[in-house]
Image 1 (cartoon, rainbow, N blue to C red):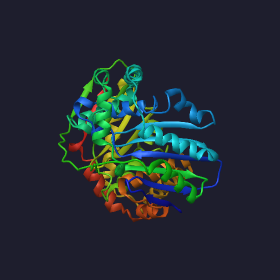
Image 2 (cartoon, helix red, strand yellow):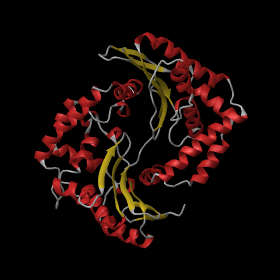
Image 3 (cartoon, rainbow, N blue to C red):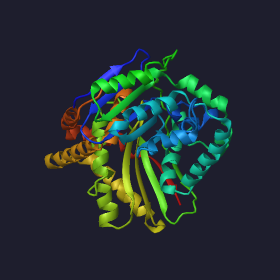
Length: 406
């Protein structure tokens, strides 16, 4: 993959991949998320993401929303526990329009008091929508369980009480204390020449100044396995079980991705789907996930089932974990698992919006970008013995925590 890489004097980095086509994608990735909040700032990173659309020094909210929509484009943003992103998709002739807009809302937002008060109500409704969706809420509650009293364990949205307490001064202080141009990447995938994207990048980002360098520091985690059951007014029982897992820079991470995909990844032939759904008809939704963070990670299994099938479903899930701990994959099984995840990887590269964000996140986290060929080589190097060792480490029954909604 041919990539253009550039770094401005202020530390903002560029990655651009030119492709043919009518549509371009670009975005600004900021290496700051909800885990950077103090307890009194709970929900503020996500609140800032919303407020970026509410007015700049030269635009009101309507003009921000209309700038790309008027020409058939789309402006969006998201917040995770470790990053904030502003991104856009548009016709290739509107590249400058998109880049200028992202720069404007990223660095010139003014956070009008009236808009702050309105947005509090919007976000509280967003929180309420999660409370009405137990299959999503349980993931947040599980991380709060395993990262008890730690910033990374708090949910991204905040609570109604914490959101109501947010002020304009708090928004500006959080940005001043955390946002750093050395922790920002502008990423682009589209049909624009390297010369033109570099010119636009310098035009709209070179003038931004910073007086600090913020570093993400690794921490020691206090983890004690726990089992909690909550009474919930739901038709189904919901269950999630899991453990801490490897961080983003751990060399065992690729093997963990492979194991997770075998167990309960997106394929309908995953072991959990075959066992709980196809063979026994116990669950409609069943999956496993592996989310690596900067200095830790989370592995989990989730399913929803009727109350009468809860214990059997838990038992079957544990059986699948035991199989991976006790039985080494054969040559054909391992080859199939590797080919499947390579296929998912290749399909992701064909989704150009996803590719744009992936390139940006890779540069933010690793300060480098591996080609798809490099990633496939990493996958090929994983051995059955390594997977068995990883399974015995992460799937150890005594290390697992469980959260059930009944």
